[in-house]
Length: 193
Image (cartoon, rainbow, N blue to C red; front, side, top):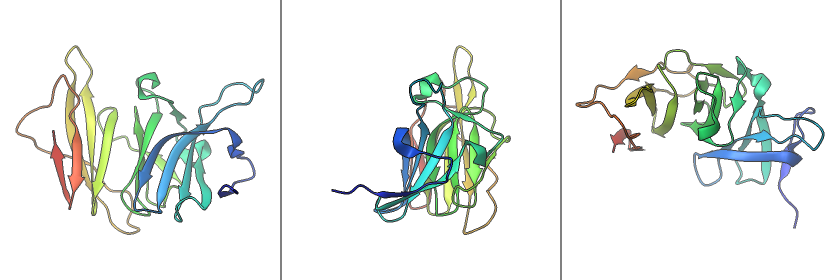
């Protein structure tokens, strides 16, 4: 059988692409974060690459590479290998066809479907999870990393082709500590476990 066709930019060869994270907006609509493994003798590269398909993988498009991120970032192939306090990403999440986030030690956001990404400097720590529902996104953020880590929940509202949304802290009746909270979203609401 024939594999999917790939629309590549001239400088991107996907034969050594390693996927790390997938975000689905429906049965056929996916974004994939990964990186290109260097060929033997060509050194080492962990530059992020984002792919997109809107037809269940029949056609895959390279929507962005490391050069689309401002400033540039690295991708860690497992979250535990992320470099603390560096622009390292490990996951991708999309809320609609325009608004998406690359996250890990840094949070990058796009409002043009992944063509360009900008570093968000307002989130006060590494982002460990992002969930979306309807026109809202929530992020679990590690706000301290001492002996007892603390976490916060942040929310952003997005819509259509509007610019990337602002994130605001969600007031909780407690401060999640020690164990990273799980978060789920459905019908415009988030649930913290």
